[in-house]
Every structure is written in structure tokens, then in C-alpha cells.
Amino acid sequence: MKNVLVVGAGRFGTYTCMKLHDMGHQVMMVDRNEERVRKILPYVTNAQIGDSTDSSFMSQLGIRDFDLCIVAIGDDFLGSLETTSLLEELGATRIVARATTGSQEKFLLRNGAMAVVYPERQLGSWTAIRFSSDNISNYIELMDGYSIFELAVPAKWHRKKLGELDLRNRYGINILGVKNGHMNMNIGVDTVLEQGQTVLVLGLTENIQKIFYL
Image 1 (spheres, rainbow, N blue to C red):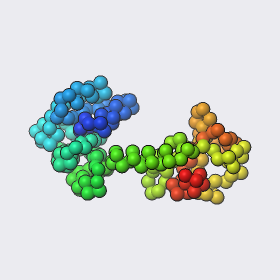
Image 2: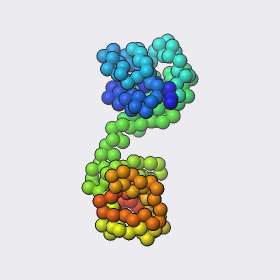
Image 3: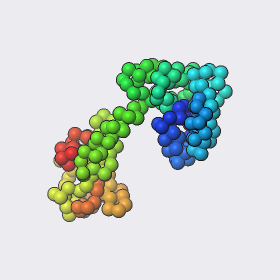
Image 4: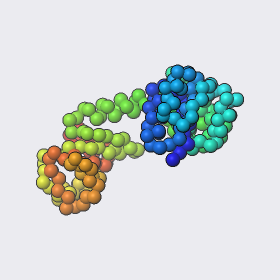
């Protein structure tokens, strides 16, 4: 369980709090809008109404005690930048900030953020890939061009063993699991694939796209 500070109770900040709450983490929300704070109360351990760019206000929150600080402000970049810088000044150990452009990312990283997220860009990319093919059930983008796809078993793999397909050596991809109602991660060279199943595939995105014609 982690102690997390989320600054900004817009849609992104709210959904972030809800997910952290579901995962069992302790969450404090900060926003200057009283109505937004009121709505988020069921999903946080604590909430404060105040200006996140005010050093007097923020210094009372015990910033050093948080394992993670998320700056989720999306409609005021200057406020987001000032908040990020202030969090670093107050001793935050890990800051993740929201950005919408590359220039914003550069400023945030130079002023205290250890990582930057692009909610709209990342969701747009996921949506385009996820729904551009009927074969894709799910998709996660990793680093350095790698991805994990959940894909329908192709007709040419029907009733063939993983060892027979030799996918790692032939195509540079790995089958992590096979799903037929539930995900089975206990697989090996003798695992037989059938149409109607889906497979969890790890590899370079371009390799997976070529094999599955995505």
C-alpha cells in the first residue's frame, strides 16, 4: 500500500483516484474547487481545498510522507508547472505530471517531474490500435517498441502445438498465455492452440502486426 498525493480533481485526476482506491492505496486529493473535492471524497483517504501553487498551503501537507505525487492538472499548464516545481522543493520523492505537448513535457521534466503522461494521446493511440482490427481483444504498449497483445488464434494455428509453431525463433515473439474463458499462463511446447481462443503475445509491435496482419 502506498501513500499518494493527487493534485487536480478533473476527469483524469478523479479516475486516477478511483483506480488507486480500488488498488487499496491511501490517497489525498488537492484541488481549489470545493465541488470537485466533494465529489471525490468517497474515493480518497483525505482531501484538501486549496491552491497547489501556494507554498504555505502545500507545506502543511507533509509532502515528504508521500510515496508518489501525481500532478493531474490539465487546464492550467502554468499552475501545473508551478505545482511540480513546488513539490520538488518541498521534498517530494517521486512526481508524475500530466502534459499535452512535447514542450510541456520538457518544462515539467526540468522542473521536478520524474515522468510525464499524456492521457489523451495514450488513450487515442490505444483506441486506434485496439479497434482497428477485429483480432485484437486488448493491447498494452511497453518500452523500446515492444507491446503485449491479446489476439485471436489464427486459423493456420488451429490444433497446432506451440513447440511446432516455434514462434520465438521464427518470428521473435513469445506466447505468454492462452485464454479460453479464463487466462492460462501455465503453457509449454505441448500446449495446443484452437480457433476461438485468444493468445497473449509479447514482442516487437511491428513483428506482431506482420504475423497477425493488424
